[in-house]
Length: 452
Image 1 (cartoon, rainbow, N blue to C red):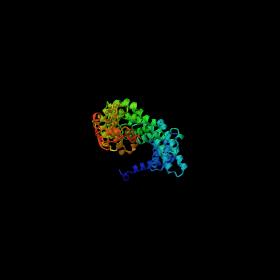
Image 2: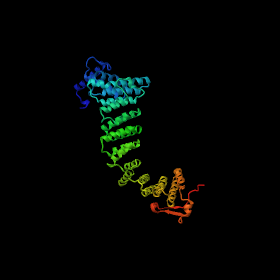
Image 3: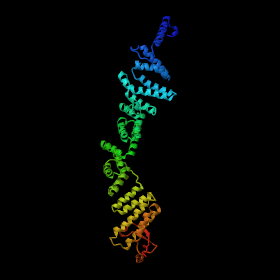
Image 4: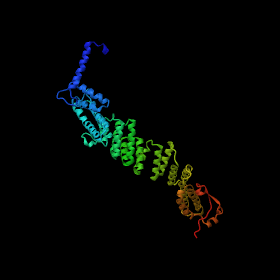
């Protein structure tokens, strides 16, 4: 019914009610506690007065009534923690509005005092509140006012990270990722690497299914492991122990052992990894390790598996295959692998030197300890490769020149050339006979340098 249409008696009732509130307001001192239990009307009046001012940022006007509420009826109106939360905000607001630095500091100290004592009071008064939110508020307040408020001056306040960590422990699923990141940053900035790693592990068990949090976990581990490789190994060893059939974990641990130079453990794990389904790239690494461990046949088998699984071998891989064949005494196959490496990388000087070494080794294998003219001729082909090596890769010229000087000394002599009808100085000659038939290289005829 519109006010204008109310009967006279109704208008009298409204007027009387308003007068009662006015008289009640005049009879009560807002900021002073009472010995007797305040009435419901008093509670609602002080609450309404402070709240209207509070929501309009009139903090000075709101203060006395809010303090009265905290002293006499802290749960008004809903039995929760709203009034305790607002008194902290009120003093922070007063600090922001203060023009004097001393006043600003005093207001923040008062806010900190209320903040530190609120949870205990809420508990004593049986009011509803969420403990984790108060830990979060403490951490946020201290983080925002570093330099102005010292936690050590207030019982119940610690570092921001400590409060965020408590909030996480109280409600791991509810805490916003921002505060989780602050916990991580606090540990890392304090060089508390193990604590950061332990928290990441806890975080994974509680929030690992959260994509944003999972990214944080990955990042913190990467940062910790880059500073402390042993921590990475220890972590991965525990993970592998827990999930022994995980190819990904086995691969990560294998790579960690490799990076730390722990060849023994990496080799042992590589054998286990090969029974799983490792990536082609991992298989290539295992192959190289087997080669370095003096197991050329096993290395070749690993390379073959990598190719079968779709890996594209690099020039270095083919060079390693050549080395494996060479160690097994299969010189022709070794040369083919080295040639493949050269085809993929034209300036692969090492591969040219490796082929030259194959030819020199062939002389040792075929001469039977008694070097004849046809054996000496093979050194021409070896020196040809050393010269090609330094032409395509000047960085290994010194190595190539050293080998050239060594093998030129055992070239056929002038007399050797004179007694061979098919040799003429400056002419060509093909090494494709007997034990050397696989070489098939055409070279130039020249004599060993004179000893005079």
